[in-house]
Length: 296
Length: 190
Image (cartoon, rainbow over all chains, first blue to last red; front, side, top):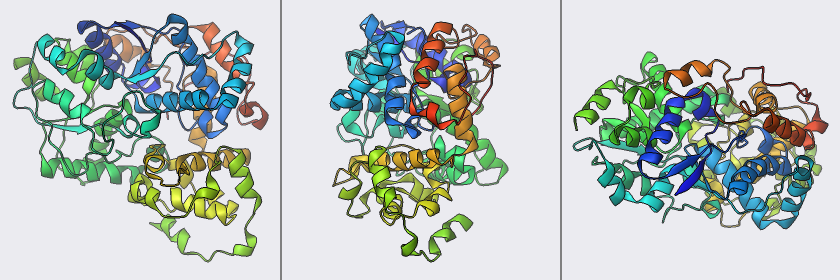
């Protein structure tokens, strides 16, 4: 199996330890990664999508053409990349006039968008193409006794009609919970499980309001399931949970800290990766939970 | 909570601009007139929980009333998370997210966009990444990765292609950012 790795801005520049985790875990599970040389931003919501529909699609399409020329699907660990690329593709594939205008522009650089490659969610891809059973067999460390609060991330769920990897019911997502359980952890339901973390455009526009949302989630997690670890399916959610807690503690809104990792980082650890390489840039203190994993 | 009080102001309907409806429909909000203000979208929206005065349902309502200036004076539309819960639940297939996006496109055409957004667009053009940190090579090396990801920052021709495409889009007509042919130089953190 081979798939293109669409890295995305935040993972490349803010959390390259997450990039390294993907580069460790995928091959360890028998999936080869392709670099998709020359990939760019997806483009993210506040840029071209906020200016012009065709401008949004044509930048997405340029990324797709790189994968199409290699005959590969792409995976991403970022919700925004997943959402933006899936939505631009959906528009081009369902509206011939949009696709025609995009291809008119792509002629400028000698490319054509065909629609033959797809964007897949890195966690859902493993869930479907490798499967929890095979993942269990490959583990070097198990998470027995560990309680995880999962944060799937908005863009892995909605709008479901544009995604290859759909949940049975996007308002009751199961994939991330089952993938954590495959590692031996428990991943119980909590009442704010599908709530937005407040990262992204909201945090750029109004940090106080953004932190209101993440605080509500943190309080719900702490009170209802008291997790050892927060595990996200999205790099933006990861950054929010990893950085907002310190602000909230200084503000005396919380008196605890829950370490936060992306699922791919947790998986890489369980598959035997070097903790410094795959979690080394975390702001929350992940050392205790990492040591516990290495002992497991 | 001062921004929330903006909604309590008296709205003068005779000042409404009817052109706004057509502009929104042309800029991607084709299904605008299907909205029956049932508020299912609002019930699913993170912006409501966070306390922003204009979320999906109210943005649509304000557009239908032609309240262009009211919307342009408020930053709410830029806080939309693009999460698409509203798209999922809308019983009339209005696609409220697309209408918020269309309202952003209206705002951009009047230069009513946040500085951070301009910086993100500039960074996208200059580097191929809306979020780009020039000193990220240090943390990349620390975790055992090459200094640059395999993207436009490592492949100059790919960046040139991306810039050529961007110069062909509506962005070029708007004059929001300089669109020359320089390489990767600037830093932008969003």
